[in-house]
Image (cartoon, rainbow, N blue to C red; front, side, top):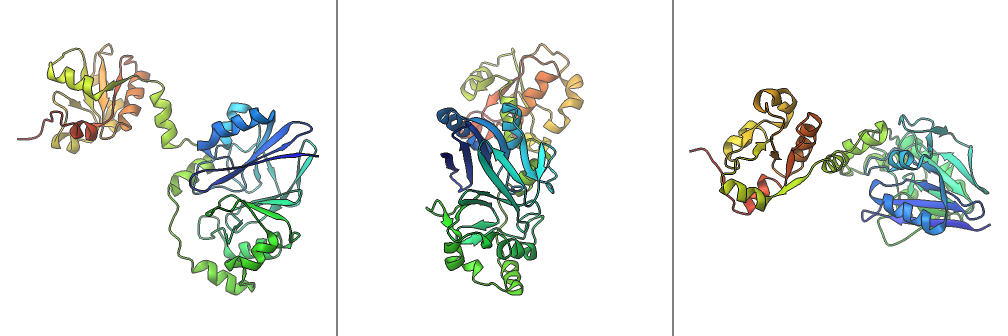
Length: 347
């Protein structure tokens, strides 16, 4: 039986895997990453596969899972270990259980330590190790849900007992390698050379690693199914038109009266300098003050902030409130100043 196997990497080394049964044309994506959604869809189409499942090997703390988005878009279930609290998980698996994918069998191995819900997935002569075992390293155990004692047990009493020639495919790779083997990791992985439990735990507790970027946001969204800030801004940008810096500058210079410039930065920032003629309603007060300060919903309002992100959210909010002609500045006050356009400052 031919197995379809694709390893997809991001620029930061995150790895996801598309596995398919070529006979029954069914597929699963393991550890899908939000920025790679189009790549997965293209591969499915190229291979003529139908996606049956999505699975995360653990709750990721350093990138945003695409499982919820793809599940909603393609109407397929999300699978995680039973200890995962994520509300969008369709069904849970536990140690020793199996997922059938066409004629393929995916064996689940519960391997807590990096996180409580970590699993590894054995497929034929390969194992997808998530962040439990990396190439030349292991998953860290100092993040929420981590436990070096459990990681030791997961490695030395379970995962590393697989046949020596089992190929290892982790969720992160920080080199040019694509995979390894259990034998190679036992021989050359420095973290695995300390085979006594107390020494291994001491080693893990002394790593002193830096925290991942976007740690809080990644955990929040991957645990709860909530939206990332980037997604909220992208969705807002789909709802509103934009006006260029050049066009706004032309209208400011001509003292055009057919629009209102709305600065949604905090009051202090506004007072230190703003686009001539602008009024100020901080984004956090927008819903509470529009009736007082913007009584005419037929006005064209151009929102701006420092970098053009909060103002996009503000314009979308104004649209929802009935200001159908709300527009966002394409750029922000920082770009406005960078172009040497006029600025009103205190005397």
